[in-house]
Each structure stands twice: as structure tokens, then as C-alpha cells.
Image 1 (tube, helix red, strand yellow):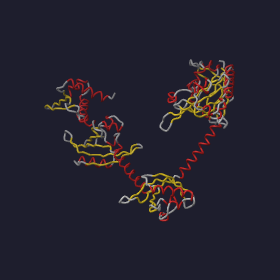
Image 2: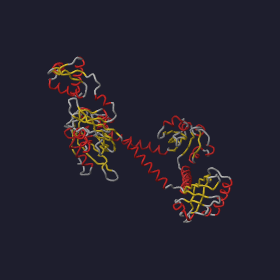
Image 3: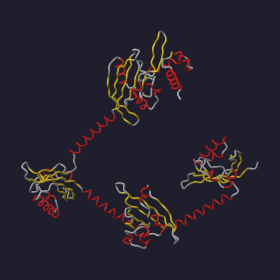
Image 4: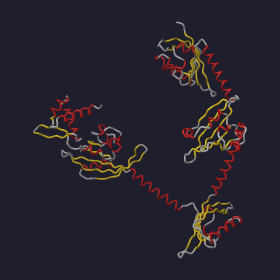
Length: 558
């Protein structure tokens, strides 16, 4: 706790017990603090409005303020409020200032702005306006302020202020107008974007009369069809189509002119000037003159050539993916969550289950799989909803096969769970190989444990990867207690740790080779030192980098 805060609290509580007031001497005697210190603390309380003072002759009597302190009123404001005296020292700062600065009020008050946590506001403009306010002139400015990666804007008011003793001061009110400025910027950007969109609309606008002749062509015709607008005026859409496409469009327009519809949609395939085809999505709206007679159509054409081609590419890609999934060696299943029935399976699944895809469609897990697999693939939707990255499980079938299974939830674009993707793979051979590997590992561990010397494997970072049974006995640790710990911090005597640790880093870096034999002590768990004769060998990866050191050691008889 801050001693100043404690002293101020003690003074306030003492004054509370003496509502009629106390002199400086009385307060000093009551709280056990010297008179000069009490006088300074009372000045702080006076400035903050927490106490009031009355003068009786030469005596000054202090009592708790009966008014709401100005500091409390300022703290209600969301604006940043600072009060400066004539020497430009901060004598008051509200909560908003403390929050903005990220500091306690005591760290701010009593400092000039340039020496306070608000030093970023020590700007020539602000200094000038403080001078104006001290001279009695109220000023308002706007200021841009960079804070970390954020740009902030403030409207700052400098208000002339007079203290109780008649001394001049300044009240500075900083209103955060960042959101308003950002909104204005966003509005300007939106207006520019809208104007640019109107001026550079990507659609081709056409007007056709009752004879299907162009009466207006927008400038976009150059980009979409390669023709200037004037080259197309007086012609019909059919003049820019191959004959078989033109015949269909003539029939469409004949029907539309006979019975105009409020909005029609169709597709045109037109010819670019370079001879390539351009596919357009066409939206037509009938146009009427002032007396209501039909005069033609206003047509908006959007170039969808790439989209149509993309759709074809997607269809081809889907066909390719279907072919891939259908021919992978793993079994693939898709279950519809709502009906809890299977809607897809690949050839590997057909071969494993002895059923065709058509025979499997619409069936449930219990109808398709052995019991050991059915329970996994038949789990309900709730479990699938709680899954984030799928779930895996291995089962052994009575037939001796080992099956690795995985299921993955599939959601639609609205986040609704629709399907379960199941993948199963026969890993019988892999499981046998893993069992063999485990057996070989256990055999190697057995050899290490049977050795009559300490054997330790230390990683390149000094971490203990392995200590055999004899090493654990010498050191007094259980084998599992040493794995993962730092060798030098755990078993090397403190007086040697830094030197041996640095030597080890140099050794790993390839600066030198370890000596064939060396004597070095270790510290056992109970604090005893044991001298060991070490034989060291480095382990390297395929690139020749040191990945660990294997050390075998024997206790040196005393």
C-alpha cells in the first residue's frame, strides 16, 4: 500500500471523528505524524476538495468537506479532464485520464505534462494554447494523436480557470472524436466507391426498340464485345451471334414483343470482335413512352463467360475427385445425419463389405458393418456436434484384421451438421510392424538395463532423453523422474554447471570432439558427489548435425 494513501486515509478518518474540525497541531498529535508533513497532506486534500478550511485568527481549522468534491464530479465524465496550475503542473486528473494513461492518479498529479505519463500530449500547439488560457482566452482545437498502431482524434478545449486563492490555472478537456472521424472517413470512402461503381459499372446496358434494333449501347461494349457503341447502333443482337443462337433469340423476342413481361431473364451467346464467344446473363425490362405505349426493352447484360467456364471446370474437378475417392485404397463412407443412413461408399468399401454402393445406400451402420465397427460409425448427431477435428479409433475384428477408423463432421454453409465422413483402413500389416518395433525397443531397453555401467543419452539442448537402470541407481532417481530434465541443472555439481554446460554447447555446435575418456563428478539425489569415468560418443542426423550424446560411465573407486 502507498504510504501517502495510508496517511491521507488516516487524516480523513480522524477528521470524520471530529466533525467540528481540528487544527494542524491537533491532527499531528492525533495521527502521530509531524506537523509539517500533516500540513502538506492537508494541502493535497484541500486541492482535491475532500476537506475544507476555516481561519480563526492565526489558527487554521480543517474539517471534512460537506460538498461533493470536484474530483468526484470530473470522474463522471467520459472525457479526459486535466487541471493545471500557473506553473503548468497537473493538479487534477479524472478517472478517464488515468485509464487512458494506464497509470495511477498519484503518478500523474504534481508533474508537468512533459514529465508525466501524458508526455505524448506535450505538443507545441498544446503548449501555446495553455499559455492563451492562462492569459484568459478560451480555445478549442482538434488534434491527431498516434498511439501504438492506432490513430486517435481529440477535440481539446482550453478553459481559463481561477483557484480559490485567486491564482490562474487551466482546465483541459479532451473529447475523443475518433469514432466520428472514422465514420466520416468511411462515409467519404463509401461515396467514392459508389461514384466509382456507377461510373465504371461492369454490366453492358442496351436499349432495343420494337424491331429489336439497338437504340442505345453503353461504353462497356468495347470491353465486353470489342465494339464501340456507335458500331452496334442500328443493328440487332442477332447480328452478333452464330445462326443457331440467333434463331432462338429471335423467337424469344417475338414472344416478348407480343406480350411484354415486367422482367425477363435469359442467356445470350454473342461473338466478340476477335471471333471468341461471350456468354451473357441478360435481364430485360419493358420500356413505355409517356402515353403508355410499349417502345422496346432496356437490357442489362452481364459477362458470365468465366463463370460458366468455371462451373464446367468445377464439374470436371468434382468428377476427378469422385474418381480419386472411388479408387483410393482406404474405405470411404458418407452418412446423412438426419436420416442416419449411408448415402455414399467407394469401391474399397464395396470390396470390404461385399456389397455394391446401391445396395449400401439407405442402410444404417448396424446393417453394414461388423459390430466392432458399427458402434463407431453409428454414433448420434450430438457427439458429432461436439467434435471439432474428427475422432479416430482402432478395432480388432474376430477375423484377425486390425482396422483404423476415422469420422469427420461435415457442416453446410450455415453451420448445420449434415453429414458424417467415415474413413476406414486395414492396418493389419502396419499393426504387426508396430508390435515388432515395440518388441525391438523393449529388447534394446532390456540390454541397456542389463548393462553394468551407467548409460545416459543427452539431447542437443541438454535435456535427458534416457538414463538406464544402473544410472538411475547411481544417481538415486527413478527412471521416469529424470526423463525430460536438464542434465546439467539436475546432476552436475553447481560449481561445474556453467563451465560444463558451455562446453557442451560448443561440442554440439561442432567446435570440437568429446574426449574418449574423462572423469567428472555427478550429484546424487541425496546431495552426494560421485566421481564417474565417462566414455562419450556423439549421435548425428543425416546432415551431420549433432542431435545427442551417448555417455557410458563407471563409478571411480575412492
